[in-house]
Structures are given as C-alpha cells and as structure tokens.
Image 1 (cartoon, rainbow over the protein chains, first blue to last red):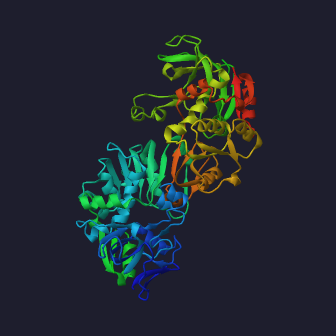
Image 2 (cartoon, chains in turn orange, brown):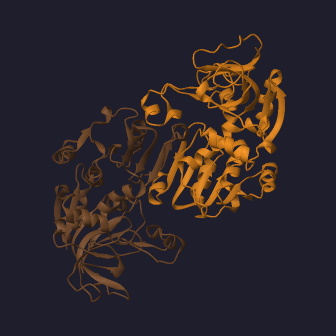
Length: 316
Length: 316
C-alpha cells in the first residue's frame, strides 16, 4: 500500500508497504481522509524519534470483520493501551505505561491507505457528520480536554493565546461554555475565522494585567506563557495546550506568590467531540487550508508547515 | 519602643521607635512572642525591598480598647486588605491589590514590643493553646493552604520534599488527612522530628518514579522541583510551597505530555490553624530551636540562618 513514511526525520512516500493484517481484537481500517497536525511537523523536525507510517488524525471505514459491520465509518482513539498497568487501572489509560500511539510511538499511522487499531479504540461516526468534519475528531477531543481538567464556569473570563489549528478548535469549544472569551491573535486570516463565529479577539499588546480567570496557552512559545502569566489574576489558572521546544525559563516565585495553577493538557475524549460535531455546534471545516492526495503527501506536509496554514488534509 | 529594623538589607536593633497609635478600626497589640521565618531571612538577603520593623509571625495581646477586651491573647492575619478592589470582592483578599503585609510590605512588623493591625485581622487564641504553639499559627495556616487549593484524598500517595520550618508543619497537617505520606529529608535532626510523629521519610535517591499522586515542594530549590516531577505520576499535581531565588529552567513539554498540574501556594487560613492547635492534633513546639530576647534579635536572626535551624523565637 501507499503511505507517508518517516525515518531519520525524513518523510518519504512509500508504495511498497504490505497492507496490515489484523490480529486478535484488531480491526483493519481503510483511511478515507487524514489530517496533518503540528505534532507531525514536529516529528519531521526531530522532536520525536519515530520510524514508520506518520499520521494520527483520520476518518476511515472498517475493512475487516468484527462487531462493527464492514464499511462502518469510524474515528479512532490514538492511544493503544494495555489495560493492566497502574495508570490504566487508575483510570488514566491515555498515560498507559505500555501505550503505543498511532503514527507517533511504535504504531503505524494514518497517512496510509490502511491502518490497524484495536476494535475498542474505534467509534462509529454519526451519519450527519461528513468526513471533512469527522477528521477533526482527534484535535477537537484534545481541545475538550481543557474542560475535562479544569472546572470552567459560564461567568469566567478566559483568554486563549494562539489561534492556529488547535487554537481555533479550542476557541469554538470554549465559546460553548458561555464564558467571556477573548482570543489573542496576530494575523488577519485566523482573526477573521474567529470573527466569523462572533468570537472576540485581541492583539498581544491589548491584553490587560489581571484580566482573566483562565488563560489557555496554545502557541507553544515562551512569549505565549509570559502573556498568560501577565493576564491571569492571582489564584487563576493557566492551561498549557502546546508542547514547547527545549526548556523554558520561568520565575516560579511569581507562581507561588500569586498562587497560579498551571495545568498541562494533552489528549482528550473522543465521544464528546463526536457529539459536538453531530450537534452542529462545532464546525471545523473553515479550518481546511488545502487538500492533497496521499501520493502528494510530501507537498501536503510542506504546505502545512507554511505560516498561516491551518488544516491540510490527505486523501488516500 | 524596641524593635528589629530593616533598612538597605541591614537589620538593626532600634530602641528609639515610638509606640504605634491605633487609628480607626485598628488595635494596638503587645507582642508576647514572635517567630523568625525563612521570608525574614530572605528579606535580609535582599529578596524583598522593605524598610521598617521586620517580622510577621507573632502571638500577642490586645493593648487598646475595642471589641476584644484589653489583654485578650490574639494572633493576626498578616495581610491588611482594602475590601473593595477586584481581588477582595472576588473572594481573594489575600491577593488584595492594595494590601500591606505585616513586616513584609509597607506595614510595621512583629519583631517589636507593639504592633498595629485592623481589629478584623485579629483572632483570639483559645486558652488551651500556649504562646509557644500560637506563635506558629501563621506558618501552620500557610501549610493548610495546600488543602484549601487541592482536593486531597485519604487514599492519595503524597510526597513532601523538604522538612524545614514549613515542611515540618506541612508534614503534620498532611498526616491528618490519612494520606500515604512520605517526606524526603537529608538530615538526621528533621528526620528524627518526623520519626517522633510516626511520619515515614525517604532520602532523595530512594524516591521512585511515578510513585505519588501529589508532590509538595517545600525546599525552594530547583532540585526539589525536579524530584517532584520525577515522583508524580501522569495527571498528578505538584504544589509549590516555597519561593525560589531567581529563575528556574523547566521542560514544559514534560508537564504537557504528562498532564501535570503545578499549583503555587502561599498564605493560608488562620481559623483552621488555631482549631488544629487547640485540638492538640498539631504540636509545633518540637520545632523550636532557640529563643532570644528581642534585644538580642540580631543573634536570633543569625541563629535562624544556620543550617538545621528550625524555629527561632523572639521575646520582647
């Protein structure tokens, strides 16, 4: 089969890969559409050591027998977990000590014609959710992880810093809480996307001190964190929603004296993401910047790495 | 009156200060006993710009008319707040934007014969709480702030890093939750104090990875935070209970990927601290390292700065 392969940080198109064969409990999934995420781009930069088929965002259809009829449209939880380690048994399966992660860690990914996942990882996609929306389930779930971790109140003043791929989805989900949301954004295009949904925006220099209860940092840059600390009031919370290259220097005493809580946040729940897509309250489709055939996937990776690019989709 | 004065980082004994005169709503308090805290020592090192009478830990007795009869033994909340700013009105008076802080910020402190506080800051000390215990109310309140901020469960595995002045009090309060507490301590004397109360201890090198739900960092050193991050499991919480000199370098991606929550924690509630002292469940008296007359207060500051020193008390 055809797939985008990563080895020694170099992505390449492979046309010689065998179609994977499902083992016990596994389902073969034909990929209908895959999305390129910032993590994929960071893997190309070498932030994660990974060799194999790239990609973890997808919508597909089942292609081997199981509880779901063949041809069922599905999305899939990307963490494949053991179910028996201390983390799994403590209700934190996404932190399973023996986990493999689709296209990220020891598991062949979604930039391919076919992939394998345990059947228990798959969720059927409601009929009214088209592929162009369903392919956003994984990043939308990551956005919702904020509300899983932090008690967000309708009257909260929330500052979101960053309006990229993930930031746009976070902005949409935060709006649904009724909170007083402002999004810090520099560029015109992402600002327009937010304005189209009636979401208020600010430039970085307009952010007031002590002006929010919760700040969500979604830029992955130290300057974003500094802005969050400027904006959040004493006793407030900062959610870190991006990974950061290298180390960051912090004044921890400021966190102590102002009693700030900093929450690291990663993968989230798929089922609520699918419910919100089905309800129509979330529409990620305006984020689609470009589409490429899988065979032109290297161009797709290049396009996704350009400034201002949001979601680039690959069709096998 | 006599008092320990700080100016240009230099503490000195003053014998020429006028006795303060209470304004409206204020009460004159005769200091019976004062305690030297790490913050006092840091002020001498120049970490806080402060000129005036040092000290914020005390037990005293009222010496001017008011709702409390003259001679009532009292302790006092150290933050004097406006009650009208956004922080006060939001229920965060300890973060009042216009606050003064006893012996720390724009308010004459407790290393003196007399001090002034608003009457509403004063709490009567129960008769069965001797001065030697009541003088610990402020740091004990700071210890209890952990339980104010974090939902601590009886079945939690908790690692406390640091067994100094504040660490010893934190250890005592954490024990009361029923949690599975282990305290990281290097030196024999603080280990013995913990052992005397049946509290388990570890050396830093004995701390296992992923071995606790909550880690409390009470050393104020970057190595303590690194140990906390090593010990806390994914999804767990680190409470920062000390201030840190200068900046600290952190790998924030590790916090994100492991979904760690970091909570800065400072001043705490006085009333529960007094209740726990009155109940006898907390006994801070074994922490008393030395006592000095106020007039020998400079020797007291020197003694408190020695390695291994815990609480040094000053008697006016």
